[in-house]
Length: 116
Image (tube, rainbow, N blue to C red):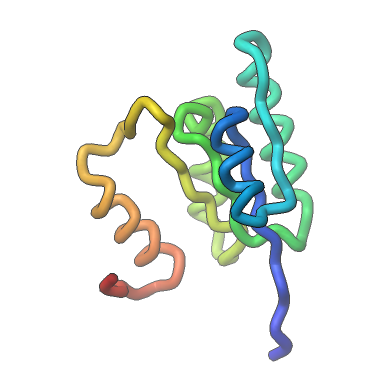
């Protein structure tokens, strides 16, 4: 099976996007303003899901609530891509145990647990 190179995309506020751009992520979508945030996040994620070369989507945890139905559908699919990762905001995370959240995400994504 040939190796396929997939892109990483980020959907977030200006701070998250800028930080990940510095890390080398080229597909970035900044959601600005307080009005139409729900529609903008939904539209952006839908566009990313249609792109076959996107393997990981990093979405700001605060924005994930706007597309919870799409995230559930993606995670229930049999395909392995894209993997959706929720990044905490600068105000903290909604998960009481972040380490366990990421451990479960990895276990669900690749089918087994790894120890870091």
